Image (cartoon, rainbow, N blue to C red; front, side, top):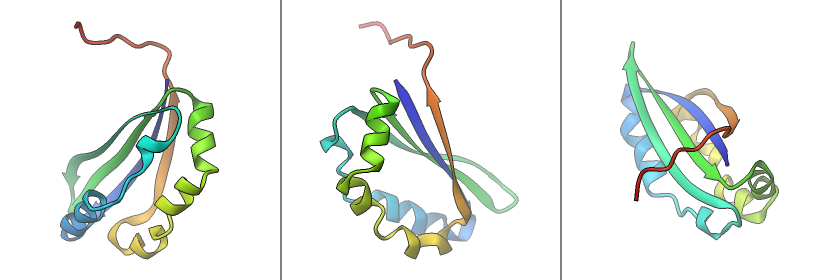
Length: 106
């Protein structure tokens, strides 16, 4: 399992617009081989800034990397340049390979 995260710092006055942008996206992640799940996470607010993280789970790092080279990826990020005003700086990418997985009991 591979987890891909992008962290965004958003000023509190841009939070509603930032959330609306993500909630209205036409995600096609489920169409990609190896995709498992997506979460958009809202973290703590500190000094007028809120931490957000997009969290995507893939079956493998190869599945994630294949998606990043796909038409689906390009379409999903085509408008990204126009939204920079909603978050501070550039998103910070973090990728993790799972070394342990404990599923919930059935």
